[in-house]
Every structure is written in C-alpha cells, then in structure tokens.
Length: 530
Image (tube, rainbow, N blue to C red; front, side):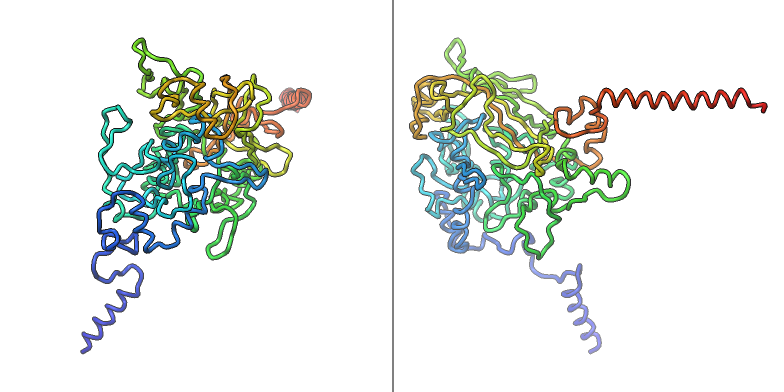
C-alpha cells in the first residue's frame, strides 16, 4: 500500500513540477491545433479563395480584421498632413507605380484577384491566409496572376519555357502556423522587384542570419521573427514607413501594462539608458537624446551577401540587340546591371548609410503635385527634421537615387503601364508615350504626350541588420574629420569641429605649458648641486 501511495505522489509531482514531463501522446508544441485533422481542410482546393472560405468556418473574425489593415487596403491617410498614401497611391523611383500594373504588383498583396481598379475589397474570401501563415515553404504567388497562386503547372514568365510546379493547396492549408521571417520576407525581402532592391537592410539573407548579420534574428541565437518586434494585434502590424517613430522618449514596455506606443522601437525593449555601467557606457547614454540607436549599431547594410540597388536609371531602358531582342548585362558576380525593360542599375554590398536629422515627418511628391525644379533632384519622400526642432535625431538612411519618366509640360510625375503582355505595356513595345498614356488614363490624370526624365531620391530609414555590440561604431568613426557624421550640420562634434582662433589659442596654451615644464626641468637640472 505504501508503494502505491509513493508512486501516486511521484506521478502528481511529475505533472506539477516544472521540467518534469508526464508521458503521453506526441503533441505539436508550436500550435494548439493539428490542422490535418480538420474536416474542412481534408479536401482538394482548386483556388486560394476556397481555402480562405474553409479557414473562416473557424476563424470567423479574421478576414474582417485583415480588411482594416494597411496590408489589405494598401492605403494610408497621414493624419499630420492629410496626404493619402499607401502603395495604391504613392509613386516611387524603382517600380514607379501600381495603377495599370495591378496584376503584377499584387503578387505581394494579402489577397486574391486584384487585377484592376474594380477589385472588391469587401469580399472576405479574397483574403489570402496562406501568404502569411504557410509553414511548408512551398507557397508562392507569381507576378501577373493578380495575387493568385499557381494551382497547376505554369510557364513563368510567359514565353520563357520555365515551368513553375502547381501548388498543393491542401498540403499548405493543413500546415498553417505562425508568421515567420520566411512568410514576411517573401514580400518584404523582395520589395522593389527583386532581392534586396529597395531597403538594403532587408533581403533574403535575413531568412536564416547569423549573429554577425543581425544580433536579434540570429537563427541559432535569439531567433527573433518579424512579429517579435512588430507585435501584431487583430492582424494589424505596427510600424510604418509613412509615419515612422523617429524619437521614442518612453521606457521599456512592461507586460500587463497598457502601452499604446509602438512596440517596434529599440526603446520599447531597451529603455532610455541601454548602456549599463560607468565610464564609457554612461557616456554612450549621453548620446541617446540626439543619436538614434541604429546610427551606431547598424554600421552598414547589405551585409549578408545580397547586393542592394542604390541607383536605377529608367532613361536608358529600351536598348535592343541587333536582332531586335531585349538585352541583359551582368557584372563579374553575375548580377544584372542593365535590363532593356528597366534600364541601368548600380548595386552595392556593405553599403555605408547616409546620416540625416529626422523627426518622423515625411511628405510625398504625389501624382498631382507640381515639380518646380526639373533640373534639380525631386524628393519622392522629403524627410522632416532639424537640429533645433527638439524632436529630431540623427538617423541612418538608405537614399535610393533614380532617373524616371515625368511629364515636362504638366510638370508632374507619371504612372506608366510597364508590366503586361498587351501592346501598351512598356515591356512589350518599349514606347514610353504609349505606356504612360495608358497608365495615366487608369490613374485618372492628364498626360500631355511629352516625356522627359527627372532625377529623384527616396529615403529609407535603416532599422534591420543590427550588428553585435563589439561591431558597433567606435568613437573615432564619428569624432573625426571626414567621419560618419561629417555632413550632419547643426551640432558640435568634438574631433570633427573646431574654430581656427580657439584651435590656435589651444595650441599656444599647450605649447606654453610644454615650454614652461621644459624650462622648469632645465633650471632644476642646472641647479641640481644646490
């Protein structure tokens, strides 16, 4: 009897004591549900919307939540200046614009069927659950299919002879799980039309990075997913490229305490005094009111072996071979540096960011805005910030430079129809006038029929590829002439700045002190016998 009581006590202890697991059936540890057992998913799916309809039988509120997010609408109203932004409205200097190119661009939309301006945003089955929740790595959406995955073998691009295997939607649906760097990265790593094109601090090397590339996402270390920082609620992902938080004066977020500030800032975890200890660490904390964490802790971008584009020149597009065929040119590493469809590219790895004062304000040059100086540089997104406004910090930026078409008579940017197999698409006919006329009609904007080219810039705040602390910038990287912050005005930086008169007086004082000490030593030497 005593033995029975003893064994019962051991069993109870195994259930209650941390670290002692009771034996039982094998279970999934990364999910509370095994989707292979759901009857709704034990069928063949012919399309993405069919999968979503099955998902909604249990996740009844999910589509409605997605419908309220920027990922769905591709639209955002800036509350500060009332500009209507979002991918649907802005013009950029890489792929240029979405109108008339919907079927290609929406391969990165979290929905199905957005092929033109008549897309119905209210239909719940149009939400693509698998784009964010696939765990198989086999789910993909091809340009030109309006956000639909290829459910049967498909030639892509058309006429290339390359076949993409059809996706088994049942297999993918039964293996859904949490979002990951892979699912977020399937779009965000490839923004701008290719791996690492747009941002420079996001590319496919972050799918499984080591500590040297990103100390937070290190696949064998902290292994952060995107959602670790961009803590999502009701499918709404915090963080914005249109109204970013440039200065966070709050402290670290505490569990259980409501905090409506962004969870995606450095301060939301590290607080306002991240450097612990006395001496040098304390001095480093003195910098945090003017210098963004990223300025020191992201010494370079495109560090993972994937080059980022730094310049895109559309004005050189359209060159053809003697046989009238499009041309591709590659550099010594096999990277494309010229494409007849897109023009010339400049690429870079281990790119040093550029540094500016930034307060989070961004004003875009939109389709109907007049370009006042066509001989200068048009800033697609002009950043706010100054050393004296009390809400700016020195931030690292990737500044993407380009040359793109515009209307010199109406003095506006344009939205050309580039992608497609129809006669008005630039990639089909290599005629700017026809392509721009077609695209501007879809945008509902006037076009004079004249085409010019204008130099533009877009600025992207750098926040990823955080290096280990021993690889952060040192004092001499900034406190020196021709250092990292050489072009940042409005602040006195010891080692970089100086006044000629003060420098002269300082050297005279130092020289006088040296002479005095030398003279004193000489007198002591001569009078040593006394």
